[in-house]
Image (cartoon, rainbow, N blue to C red; front, top):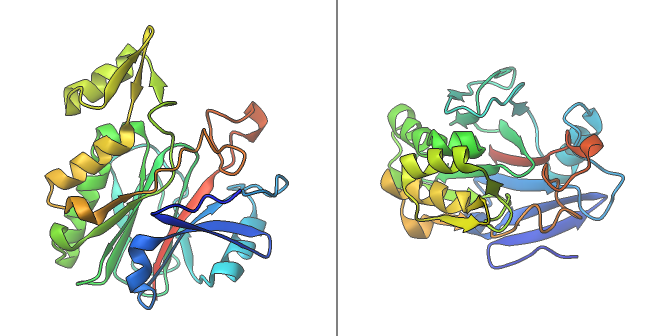
Length: 253
């Protein structure tokens, strides 16, 4: 199956499958960005404890010096990466203006946001689970890009990677109340005694509120639950598979 659509391009090479983002096509000489997935090879999982994932992916995509978060904690915390030996821990977003350092986050229903400012040549990789979304980690990280690197939000391009879609992000009243209090009820629908939330739209709306242009926000429009045969999905997985993750990666060349 091919997941390509108006926003993404599904690449299959040498046993590695990943999505490229058409929003970044004009910047191929400046950045590398990908969303690595399980794909049709059911024996290949993005195991966070496996070096095989890193080796195969790096070789295929051409990455060096990959920096990944030791423990993502569903917060609004971010950190600036200044060299490839950095080992960030207990944060959920990475930023850098250094070339040849790949920023990596792992998701399996949460929203990974990849951000690039072509004017200051800076990037960010944001893990926005529902808690992080409610804490506005994405817009806070864009504001940090502006404060630390001189970026302007109107110049930043943001890609929302595949995540759990609004037809499957079913929550109880406690989570609904958090979103309703923070954002209002615009993207909340009733589902029997539960609620369905379109978290990606709340992320997009919060980015617009800090000055990112609506036309510069690109939603991949791929649901991890609907496509759990190709993408890792926490909700759709058997318990033994729930540790596996897709990987969102962005790097300056």
